[in-house]
Image 1 (tube, rainbow, N blue to C red):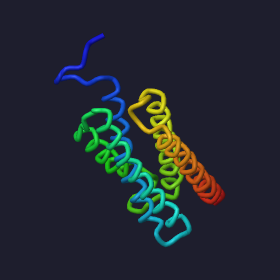
Image 2 (image 1 turned 90 degrees about the vertical axis):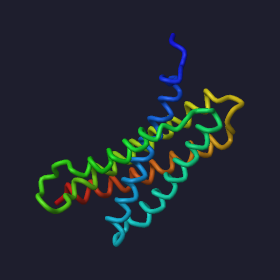
Image 3 (image 1 turned 90 degrees about the horizontal axis):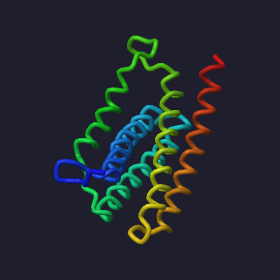
Image 4 (image 1 turned 30 degrees about the horizontal axis):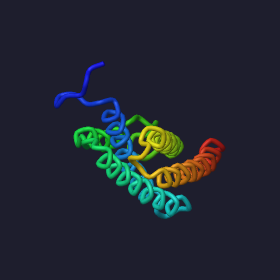
Length: 164
């Protein structure tokens, strides 16, 4: 196996930076969704989730520092850009937002949260003695609650969108 050099990264470095990119895109998507739904019942929940996921992203960055994993800003920028590009997908409407977009975005947000929980679990196993296990357990629980909230929002939205 190749040893990491200044030009390459270890698998853990790549893994955590990929999760950071996903977290960056996820925060952007949640913030935008919260703005879109500011005047309806989903707005407050999405705003709360956006704040929590942003905090989780900051926690990931701190854990990366604790583990000596350099943040690859270009990967985080790609996560940010990916969310912006994702807005350009055809949605069956020319100038307005499709209700199907809400369902798909809630599914994507839930998948992102599930991925984040998997990352916390991986760190729980790998970072013995280097990271606070109690903190990771709290993050795992919080992520599970976030996924549950997103699933409730997704189910209600899908029932509403596809019933019409």
